[in-house]
Amino acid sequence: GAVVSQHPSRVICKSGTSVKIECRSLDFQATTMFWYRQFPKQSLMLMATSNEGSKATYEQGVEKDKFLINHASLTLSTLTVTSAHPEDSSFYICSARGQQGNYGYTFGSGTRLTVV
Amino acid sequence: GIQVEQSPPDLILQEGANSTLRCNFSDSVNNLQWFHQNPWGQLINLFYIPSGTKQNGRLSATTVATERYSLLYISSSQTTDSGVYFCAVGLGGGTASKLTFGTGTRLQVTL
Image (tube, rainbow over all chains, first blue to last red; front, side, top):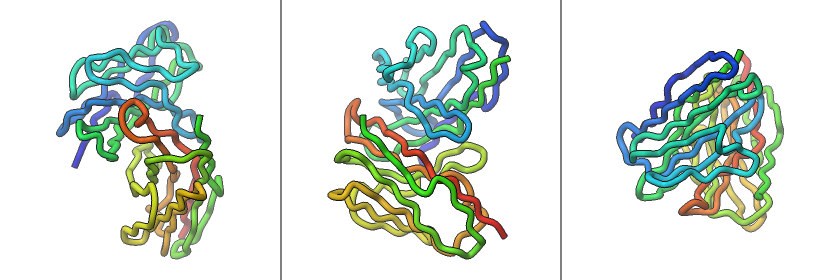
């Protein structure tokens, strides 16, 4: 079945530094990738949608200059949290859809970011 | 945007018990899915069910699209069923294919 690999699974960084999270579709071409953020005991909130080769579409209230998304190939999307602050600490999850646009959203295993 | 509410927010069951989780949504949708998030955070797709009824083992789901709700049934619950259950809805293809997640039901199954 479809597999999405997300790395790293956990990261701790200092305030002011940047962190990059990778999301790879291993056995299918992901024309669309989604990035979510989940705070403890809360639901998943969509941050942005990215299509291969084009700029990401950010949800209202998400700072595009802070959360840089790159979807340069059909198998890789990255989320970079720039100038991270403690309030950016959260669980970040990516999801990918294949070229057929089927209903099969495949999720990565998530990245737990802690900013100290 | 579309609102997705789930109930109950928390549920504790003894192993072997049955349960029904509900998902209400505020607008017509072309896509409705149920997910299970395990204690490690991994999301697993359970059902794609924009309408009708489906069953998979001890789990089944029913969506009544005209009344904007979906139900997830868990029978003979096991401790491995513990975690958070989300329904998520969407409007179909293109950039509208994004999913909006519900508020979730946190299930704990005890021995």
